[in-house]
Length: 238
Image (cartoon, rainbow, N blue to C red; front, top):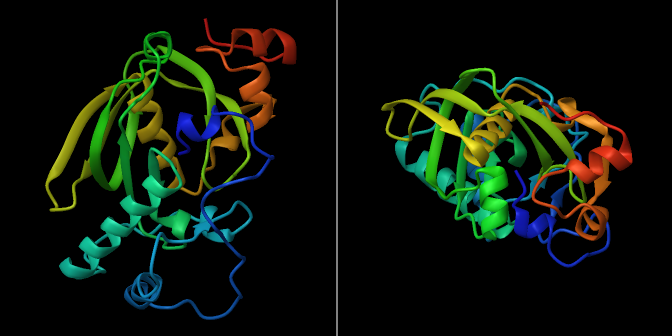
């Protein structure tokens, strides 16, 4: 998931990103997962991010069940985190770097103004690894805000999501996670978990809200998207 600093800074040409996007991969027999990860990690620097249109983003990822040995898993998680920071983003799922495993990393220092923090529930989310995550809504509350994705560079749209969710997963050590998230952290874990099911944020978005990063920075850079909803003609939850 793209960070606010990437999406609401001074306008840049549409599609500009600080990360190289991975070109479409040739068809043919898939590499074993271990070999695929070893090949990715053989290059210096952040990993190339897969762009929308690549089938790996549309297929449910394979549950993680020890396909990588402990050393390789730790190296891969470190590379995911470094790539997320470099993008910059607040979450990154393994399929976004071409690896079809149910693994994601999330982290958000939440460097936002107070009015944004209050409107969006944008509070710091410490770094964590999500292995085989799933979520379910807690209560009936909904929240709708502009959202972006590192695999759909240059664009964002309003997504109406549950305001609070219960997340179950494993951490990188195989320990169970069972935790509730609200506000912006809930949005981040939903966005990344959706990636592991082959779902992009645009599948859940109000498409009338679809805007370039430049348009959001110049026209709709409010803590909440009420003006955008009126002007572009899309509903918001009560």
